[in-house]
Image (cartoon, helix red, strand yellow):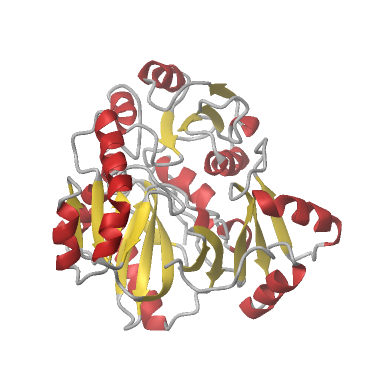
Length: 402
């Protein structure tokens, strides 16, 4: 039997040039993966010699909201993507008028505002924590009553690694944080935004956290990576454990929810779906990231295809890669305070510890400087090594971020 060649499908092929809005570590690893495939890269970032620029063919040094600079980048590229969601949705929208921006600007705008994100998911019947939009400090009393006296208040725009978040467990906390919230609201208005500055979410006791990274291309092909069990310290992701230590039915529901998100939102590229697992085994979506994600770094050394190669494949409309997990793996973030302890052990690290450093100039405390992937036959063995090596001695062990 003679095998007939597949019919060609519209795709962006090497040696095309891909522009990246944002020059951080996600862009760096995206460019490294794409270079293996023959693509070229150019980056827009305000910081000279940004991590992604170090491995790209050129950099436009400009602010993320500089439309003219973004157009200069696009003029040198065959398509443009973004590596984090705090780049300007207006810039992405302007570029889409004259340039191929596979991810578009609509999803970016949705994920940049927590009320918009939660509302969009709820409207599509996807499970989210109960929430209330907050337009003034006065709205918070009503939200506290609605949520039974316990809630989490967050800024709707910006905020990461726990910044711009407040745990409220009593009426006294409302009074305690009132001035901080007023400042956050004033800052929001001063920036020219006319939408809700804050969101209140019901406090939901949970067992832990999972994330699932899903890829979708313009052919409508969808693939989900194995879920990662995430452990946070001081609101910063500390480690991701794969396979996640949850019952099979919980894992299956998490993957199903993440795939539904990708389909419902028409994702092109990657989307990371971060979820809470309640004490009853219920899955609730916490937030989305429409790009490669910290919790997917394990794929670099433990999967048939990394999340970064998968993103390039998806935005270029290539067939999506195999997402098979070849080995158990634990990813541990290397923050600024961990760099010297890691380097001190670099020459004696076990062969199954894979080091990824991002080329950042200054190692500040709690700044993400790199990560390691511990690729072993058992998760327990990796966790024992993390505890014993002393590199992360400043990080106490716990499950979940609270």
